Amino acid sequence: MNHEQPKNPLHGLTLEAIVVALEAHYGWDVLGQKININCFKSDPSVKSSLKFLRRTPWARAQVEQLYIDTFSN
Image (cartoon, rainbow, N blue to C red; front, side, top):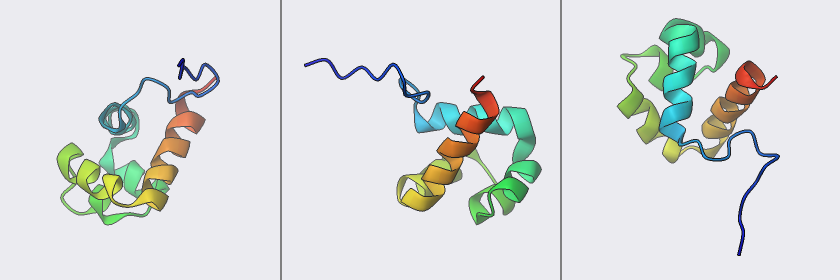
């Protein structure tokens, strides 16, 4: 079966790649303002953010949407 998703802007991206790109683009302070979650505001790191986002679907959805809004043309 072919599971390619050519219309999905997140296709082929890991959650880690998304968080790293957003942090590089905005920095933790702005990320914490755009998405109000503690893993971006209190002692932020990629590792702690990934741990939280992997078990918090609503927060992950917000991060993925911000990535799409930021980097999709």
